[in-house]
Image (cartoon, rainbow, N blue to C red; front, side):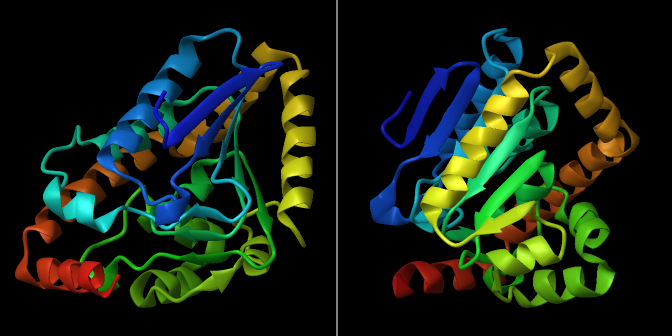
Length: 249
């Protein structure tokens, strides 16, 4: 495990913590690789019953580290970020997101793939892909309209507007919102322990059946989006927008 991805398993609960507070938990290629490898291993580990992903009590993730992104952009479908997406989609154990603070880009598009999402009311979420000259990813083209409705999904994906943790709950993207990080974390641990003590074969079968009707479509949409994402990165429009954002930071 790396310093920027902290992992620990206790009582059947594997907790993955994004730990790069000085960069608001911005995700690098190395972090994506570690996350993907750990999730693939969790599928094979009988000691792991539930997976929790968190960014701690101040920020879930600010999305991709744009400097790292520009230096080593994804150029193929096995790129680290895409491998992470595959690992999440293929995970057979319940995945709980603990979202305290900002959840930008993939921090938002990850949430529909989690089985449960607990969030602080004042969290700020956004999918600013178009602003960066890019397109959405992680099957957001399918998942967001299905959850949010096509009109609201279009507004948020095309504009990149911010919305709150409370709105995420109201719109069906999260299960419950809390006033503080400590309350959110306590609720996550309570739910994780409950699932870890549930009959495991029945739990995994239920998750598989819940996902089965759309799983093939999700895989296809992710591939299509990733191909479009790679192509968009090669445009002058995207390079200009990304460099401007890096220089602004």
